[in-house]
Image (cartoon, rainbow, N blue to C red; front, side):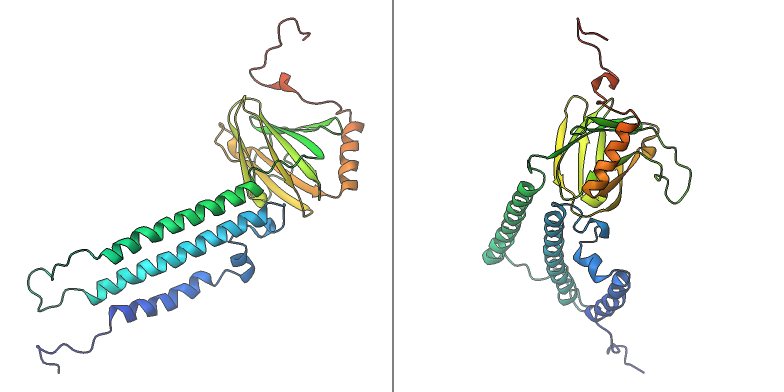
Length: 290
């Protein structure tokens, strides 16, 4: 039996935390594949989806890896200080008081400044390739948001698709019959964004880009879809009672299939463009024919 003045063997807090981390970390990462980690845990269909996704993924991966390294260092120092300088049973009064250390103060000031500047310039470079991309589109498509559906004008072909609201029905693919936006693959696109009533938001998660659509403040999204496939889009701005049903599909297809689709719109009589006369607050100009 141990003497009351001689504590029995104790496992240190550092060792306990190490064992806990060794058990918990593999469990947390067990469901993650190397491909998911390399893609920054973004949807796998985003990989190579557009000419912008690689830049976004690289920025995100660099940011969270750098943040994780800094976090691990800080957490390690905190835990070390807690364990190494914890109060012992025989300690009396306050611990020895020390003045600040100038080298440590300089380190704690300079390191965050370097990190912030690094993140800033990296963001600027990525924005120049993505958000600020103004590559002229050889195919122009107008996307008009409205409560609670979407209209698509294919400007080059002078045809349109008029979307209607698709109520959710509880199925696994509630947007199966939602409005569908067709995009030709490997083509420079200009997607003009317009709201007919309230603030909406154009979001295709796989493209890693979102744009708010504010009435009276039209803007364009320039990109090139580089992978054929089916994607899901949605409004990402709360826009009223049926916001959750404001879904749309995106089909990136070959040029031949795109031409076939737009021709089918013309054959249905959907020629011309759905203009601002369908906006909620539109009024004809004085003297103009209604």
